[in-house]
Length: 405
Length: 168
Ligand code: FES
Ligand SMILES: [Fe+2]
Image 1 (cartoon, protein in one colour):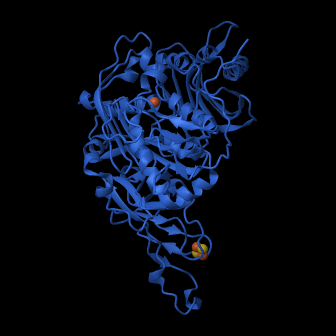
Image 2 (tube, helix red, strand yellow):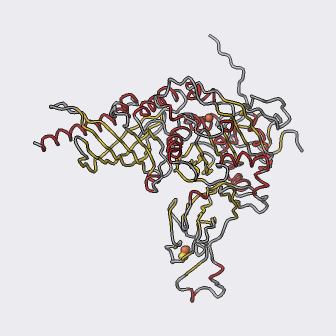
Image 3 (spheres, chains in turn red, yellow):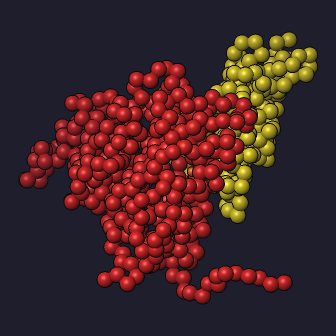
């Protein structure tokens, strides 16, 4: 009996992310997925840095007084619609002693009252009342103690925030080439209606959650195979700052003897050429419109090994009642953390996190044509679409490549 | 007389709950599906307390016809086989209320807790919640069988601790 292995590990595994990256552009050091100290750096350089983060859509808080809370890294945010219909994002922290102001995940309020010393904030963040202020410090001025706003901007109702000092304007950061795909995803004009949420935690590093490739569908997803569901024409496009855009034609499933209720996979959208649309914004926002599902995924990097994802599903405001019903049915069952064709993705997020606690590299192969050049031209079904994002990550984090000065 | 019928219905409903829990705790999806009525408009929903409270229709599992209940069995046993990380569950339920809802039908609510044990791991709470059921008694004479016409599992977790394979 003999055993063969093409690789015998002889190195010294530290588990710490290397500060120098391999020269080969298709290799990602696996240590970046399991390094706790690296996560702290990522919070500072990426999540609290010069980048925008999608934290919600205006359709989640349609009425005056509606709010939701969300976290950017460990920073709690309060997103509220004021009497003037403006959506504002505040730090969810009382300006007095810093008490967490709002505890609910969502709701509707006339104003926000801090229970500690009863400071009362209007929906626009103004400090409206603060009992006992006659005895406050000599320099206290009520108008200086409104809730602290976080810089925010919207694109077709998608709410993004940044804590960085030098973040480019939103449209510039999104990039011209991203806009048509993002528009298609957001129903054309962003006039969406919230259908509900699926919220789940994955035992996965946020980069692993984000690192799904474009070609696994027919391999990983038995659902696609059983439905005899072939992909159509399309493209995958990357931007230099790490976004990935993906559009594909959708050929309705054929040869289905598999589902007893095939209405689940009916496509009622008007344009099958854009049946599948994905926008992935650096660092960790993934949004998809697949068939009639409009799904924005607001994600939180909780730690180096926990990623929380809030799958929010929408209809369009102009939809017929019938189409809304169809969207509810399809959205609930197809693409989420328990969806027929994507539960496997969720399983992979966790399994890849476990498997990556071993020495060596995550290797990109399909579509790799050069070991030294970051690809810019990527076919629809290549896994190299991830490489520009990794390259952007490497630069933001300040890691040099082997041999680079 | 009606008292006697109620007692018999009562034990049929207990037996239904037991069959449901046993099916899921054994990972037997066919037995799970068998606890539901065969009528085409038989339904199973599993949704978060947040969606429920806010009147948002989206669910984690939205099986709004009998065919889709059978399709869910296929998801678990055929589509996902070999990809997910195996885990076992233990369901505990306690009946909270029961009201007659027409001939041989009852509205029943129960509290539930689901414990989860991943293969190779320790037991944790998956979630708790409330079942809201429409249960039908089928059969006559002294042969009764209770089945779900509708089961709505409303789970408490705002954020589930993992992806979900099996129904609640
Ligand atoms: S900390 Fe909020 S009122 Fe004092
Ligand atoms: Fe996938």
